[in-house]
Image (cartoon, rainbow, N blue to C red; front, side, top):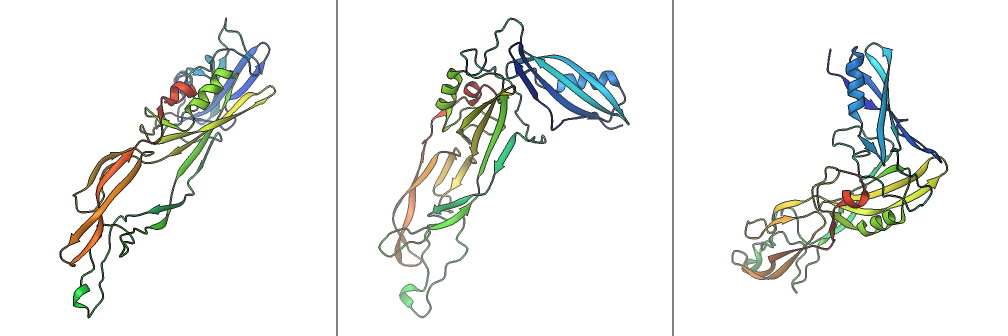
Length: 297
């Protein structure tokens, strides 16, 4: 029989909060095994060791037949730790890996995303496909090579053009048994800062934290929505296409700008604007997102 598989069900992570404590119930579906002990051990090990400050207490599995099982893992409030109610001054939510989806893991209802991009003004192309000059004019029989610069005018200005660009913005909602003012201040501090370390599988410098919003609901605790935007890191950027100006590295949220000068195109017999230097500017501060958000990997 193929290897045992486990998936978390849609109604998982049921959070209960009252004046006696807090609990969370993770629910799973396991299949491809008739060995109850193996299924129990696998379900128990599948989930995180802690969840928003709650600790793993017990695990139950029930057979459905045909090698399929229902599994439940219960998380409870640690003994000896006072429970803080709405907006209290208790401890910060414990960092853990719950709610941190892997790259190939099926995403749950707590994850939302948007890849619909907007427009971006660019001044250089990916490639100059062709250059065509006027015919019958011996003084302009060859179009000058502008080294990928778009829209160079006779007076030296660079018009560029607007192109559609994709983006990746997403949000993750997590339920927390409590929130402190100190934690809210940490979220504010991390807003519009990029990841110093790899976070949610995104390399350092490629993920921008857009902020968070939270809401309290009776008997459910806090629901916090964390928003992010991703931009791809780049290396060995050939600015001109001739290998003479190569940017070694640019983080996704760094800003690249170019310096231009007049250069002689000896084949065309004309002077044109061409990039001759490049600058990569850091415009967002970086932060350890896991440290300030209290979760992630």
